Image 1: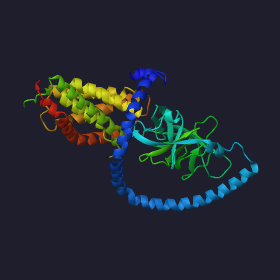
Image 2: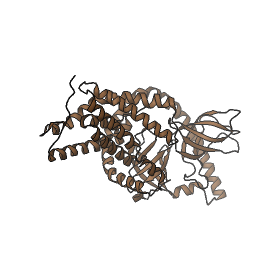
Image 3: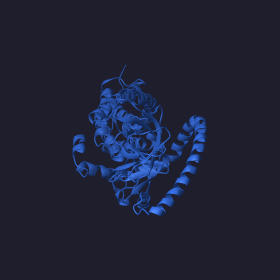
Image 4: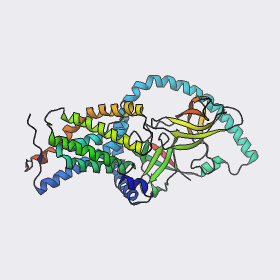
Length: 259
Length: 183
């Protein structure tokens, strides 16, 4: 069965059977997820107590940084609007993004194996969701849709080892835009691959989707922050570690981006 | 030490009721495994409720029932989370059968027996899962496997084994005495 599943087409008999099974289980999972939510929250609350002290200190520092970033962002935005009004770019990426339709969804199940970082959401083809649709939340990019049933869909998270997202690094000065591919790892780590060795990167720079032609992702969706940059003389590319903005342990409500 | 006798229902009504109980247990196991267990993180790992349930059914109902229960549990989990169809079934059918065979051939009267079998089943299951990942050409870092999956999961499942077995035994108990004869 395992062999046939991996060898058959996406619309093969076993895939169809799986979708049918998912359709049957979806209402039960949705109900169960709602029932246990208070208990999950209580568990998270206990866990958070242990990390609250350190978290508080870190957050205060981050708030100060973010205030500065917001001031810079407002300034940039103002400049951007002015430039847009001057140039009048008809195919502005932000315009394209505004045309995207967001479908709200709730996470109803998670992968049961540590080897996979995937979740199941309660919207599917009946809601217009399709494979490859990006999934976001208020913090940034969550992942992409990889399987769709009628009323549910599988989302492969950014941290999954089969996740690859074309991305670019913001800021840092210079004319060169640093691009690469953000990839997940089995240990939950997120790395940026194929980063030009000449690019000047430093910790704290923001990483967003690049939205290159043919990409499934809209340009500018926040992914994470550069955590560490490693260079080796013998390596072809830089070794960049990225800290995702999304807290994948606590995702509950997400938005599927329909294009 | 005398091995406890496994009792099985002999009437049609008894069999139907027993199947219904197993079906309810299967459904609850799948829901717990997909909606609750992933949120409980201890030492970086989440408890494998399905593994504990399959071992319990194997211990209480024998190798055939354990294997069937394991297969169905794995299939339902794959349906629920869009996992590779057949992978969980393959692992759990082996674990369920092995737990059942252990109950049929060894002394399970000791209170530690369920814990020992759950630990053994978890170790076997995780080795099979990691082997499958290796064959599927996925990353399987040895250090990560030992420290973040294997050892934490064995500890967590060992802690779950006794209460899990108790609940399973209570849930499947009444039918055993309903017109049953010693096997």
